[in-house]
Length: 159
Length: 181
Image (cartoon, rainbow over all chains, first blue to last red; front, side, top):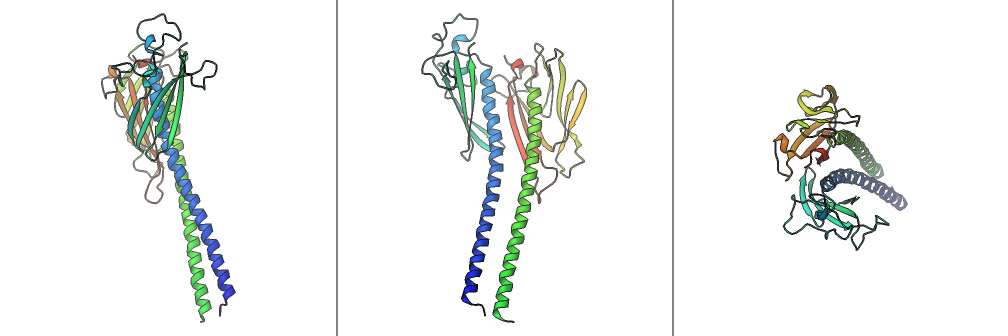
C-alpha cells in the first residue's frame, strides 16, 4: 500500500510539474504577444512616417510661404498651429500639424494619431523652447487599439 | 493488481500525456514564430526596396515622371542611384505568375523592373495594392494629379502551419518630394 509520505512526494512532484508547465505557457504567451506587438508597431511607424513625410514638404512657417519674404528670424514667425480657416489637408506650413489628430483604419485595426509641434532651443534641439526659434519639432504619437503607443519626432530648421 | 499499481499507472499516463502536449505546443509555437519571422523579414525587405524607389519618383527630371499607375502596377522615372541618369522603374504584382516553389496558392511574383531589367521577387506576396491620391488627399487615377502613393503589402509564409499561413503586412503612403506641388 502507498503510505502518506509517498502521497506527499507525489503531490509535490505534480505541483513542480504544474509550475513548470505554467512557466512554459507564460513564455509561449509572451512570445505571441511580442509577435503581435511587433506587427502593430511596424504599422504604427509607417503611419507616423506618413505624417512626417507630408509635413516635411511644407514651408517652415506661415510667414515663409508663398513668394520670397525677407523675414526677421525668429520674431516674424507666427504662432504654432493652423491659421484661421486652415484645416487638413489644406495645411501650408509645418506647424499647422500642431494638435492635428486623425484616425486610420488599417489591416491591423484602428490607430489614433496625435501630433504636436514645438519650437526647440537653438542650443539644445532636444529641449522645448518657450520662445520662437528657427527650429521646430513635430512630435507624432500613434496609439493602436490595444493602447500600444509609439512616437516619432522630426525636427525642421528654417535655415 | 493492487490499488497502488493502478494509481501509479493513471498518474504516469497523465504526466506522459501532459509532457507530449507541452512538447507539441512548443514545436507548434516555434514553427509559428519561425514562419512569422520569415514573413516579417520578407515584408521588411520588400518595404526597404519599395521605399528606396518610391521616394525617388521624379528625382532628376522636371514633371511627367509617372508613366503608368494602376492598382497593381506603377511605372515611373527617377534617378535611383543619383548618377545623373534618369531610370525607368516599374513595380508590378503579376497575378499571372504563381510562385511554384511554395505550397501557398495565393502568392504571386512581384516584379521590379529597372531600365528593362526585371527582378522577380518571390517572397510570398499575396497582396500588393497601390492607391493614388491628389494633393487634397482625395483618391485619383489621373496621372498628372497624383501626389501621394499608398502601398499595401501582405506577405504569407511559404507553407501552412496547421491550416493557416502566417502573414505580415505593411502599408505606407509616400509623398515623393519631386511630384509634390
